Every structure is written in structure tokens, then in C-alpha cells.
Length: 218
Image (tube, rainbow, N blue to C red):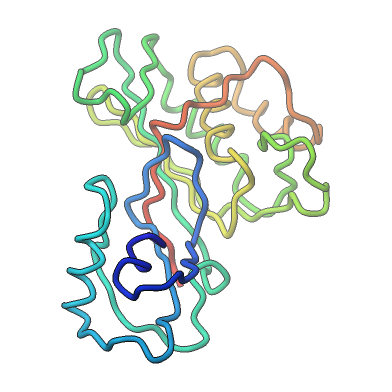
């Protein structure tokens, strides 16, 4: 994105994103902002939109563009974010889902997963659901607004709304929920992990390909 802005305006400009994602994670609702260089050419919104997309790789597209108020910041003005994780719960992985979902071949108990996810709603220290062991404890408190699980055929989707997320937090939550869904732990174990204050070994962190940043709310 910064390269595209540089190509259009002829100088480097910092682009600030609403949320960082791991390699392999998808973003459907990423938000970013930049300050147009002083004295640069004035474009209409339509012209600038087309020009920036023309300099981006086909995997990245600006879907909407507009002028923001001066105090707006893509990251710090955000109130909460929504992530969605896609699981294909079937013994055979559809080829078109490769790189877009996590295959779990054994049957999942969706009711147990929902019950486990509800244990995480509220303001908690999510250090046990973070992959960053160097994070200071005081910085690991986050508020999760909602955790939901839906199923349509083989597709299972876990949606997590929160005011903020730690490194690999959503993927760690999904990995634990799958652990519960496979019957390896009961739903209350999700809350017990929170109370323990430590990350339990042996629980798989869900792979990045199934995770999507869906929406940022301001």
C-alpha cells in the first residue's frame, strides 16, 4: 500500500492500518489511512481510487476510499473488531478451500464449542490465549464482546468480536475450541485456562489460512 501511494504521489508516505495480521491471514475489512503530502497533486476521490489500485498487486484491492476527519486514526480510533475463522469439518477438503480454511476431519460438537466460547466473553487476562510469552501481564487484558459458532454443511465458522486482540489470540481461541469440539476437554476448561494465567502445552493454534479480519467498527 505504501508503495502504491509512493508511485502516485512521488514520495514516501506512512500508511497506518487498523490491525496487523499474521502471514497467511486474510483481511476482508481492513481499514487504513495516510496523510496526503502537502503540495502534491489534487485528485478526485474516483481518480485516486483508480490510481492506487492500478499500483497494487491483484491480491490487494482498495474497495472504498474517502476523506477522513483530521483526528481520525485507523488504529487508535477503532472501537472494536470482528474476526471470523472458517473450518471445513469433513474427511475430504474441497480443493477450492485450500488456503482459505482449516480442515478438521473428525466430527465437531458445535454445542460444546459454543459453550466453551461463551466462557471467554468479558474482560479477562488473555495471556493463556496469546502466543507471545514475552508480553507483560498488564498488557494482556482484553475485552471480548461475543463469541459465536455457526454451521452450514461442512463449514463451521467461529466469530469473535473484541475491543482488541493479542498476538495469535483468535487462532489460539479457535484451537482451544476445536479441542473442546473434539471431546478432548469440556467447555469449562476454556475458563480454567483463563484462571490459570498460563498457556497450556499440547493445544494446537489454528493455522492462519482460516482467519479473516471481517470488520473494524469506529
